Image (cartoon, rainbow, N blue to C red):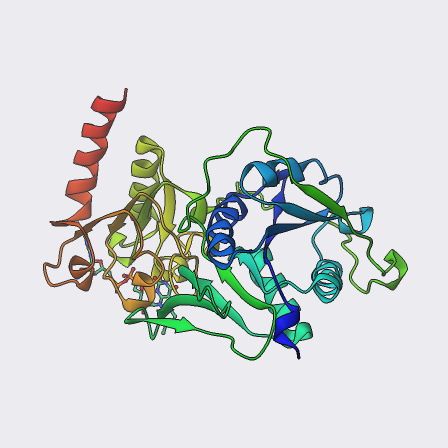
Length: 334
Ligand code: FAD
């Protein structure tokens, strides 16, 4: 591989319900900073059906160019078709770096593309920097259960790829009307050649929450005792307009669905405020929420490890404290 042939920073622009997802806009901001330091262009790669107009949003958020794959074959996300677009575009234009949001789509796509492109991928990055001279991407992420930050380099292969956690990087202030170059691309596969068919999409009967996008999370753990006790978490969350999160033990007890689980085997969240109620603070939970802006813990055990990782701690029984908080917030908010 001739590394010198590769140039430019790319961001995979993920689209959901006809809009660019927030993490992609954040990555355009982060990618812009890398591109400026390296003295190269920032490009987006936009894949979907009817998505071309969204390139204008990408320009406003910092992209200089956008590679667009707009085709009915991309109407619904399938690893097979989207990775083909990434691979063909990469092989044709040879970017030095590709960044993806660490969403379920971004993680799936980046890992599949990295395998086929035989290059390295750093997952769940929280800090990005670049060596301006060599173009070596420095992708840092918590490792060993969050005890150290590891900076991962991909010295011998291109493109260098990373998935980046939502809400960590800062999007640029959009510049309305900012223009860039749209490069329309065509995919070489046809629908008949695609092995995966989406037959039906069954929406969950309950409203699916995106806890990784929430500004305020009220999370409950095993300390709530039972499903009825966990109802207190829902009541508090509803009062203050928060999203409900949970520890794995609360999920495994069947009190709440898995997509509310925060932690190593759940979702990584970075809300502005995180309430941890009746949660002991096991490392596997902490790695999923320790970057929250403000962490408030309520636990009846003064020695619970969560008190080492919170900004404010209240020692006491959740069933006494939370109803008081609900009452006070209701007074203030209504
Ligand atoms: P507990 O540890 O039982 O803590 C309950 C807490 O509630 C205690 O601190 C207790 O003092 C307090 N309490 C009890 N009654 C009250 C009351 N009335 N008022 C106030 N406080 C009260 N865990 C996750 O959360 N997310 C993960 O993604 C995850 N992934 C894992 C992956 C692996 C490979 C492994 C091995 C474990 C993982 N775990 C995960 C599990 C983790 O190790 C802990 O077992 C789990 O987080 C504990 O959940 P908890 O804090 O709700 O329960």
